[in-house]
Amino acid sequence: MLRQRLEGGPVKGFKEVKENPHTKEIAVLIITAKTDPISQRDGLALGACEYLTKPLNPRQLLRKVKEHLPPSETFPLSRVAAVVTLLGLTSLL
Image (cartoon, rainbow, N blue to C red):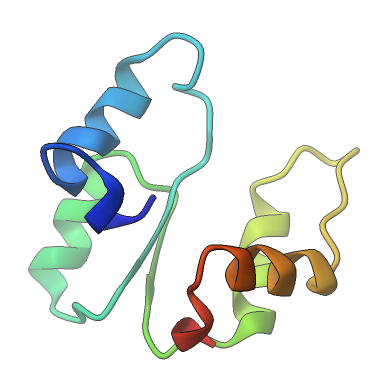
């Protein structure tokens, strides 16, 4: 979820995803520049499955995404790169 694209801010948007019966099972990974333990604790307390800090290694992101996908799904590194590029998040890499 992109902070700047969430109406009402990232916390409100996150809660909306987790409270919606159609989206509540979606695994949410937080990617942030905030490295302090309180921010990490708060992000995980909201229900995030991962709290990753920048700069982010693309292989680390792929590994974390794979950990939270159903076993039958695959997500090759090329798809991660394509999604990151599509969203304009190449600065994360």
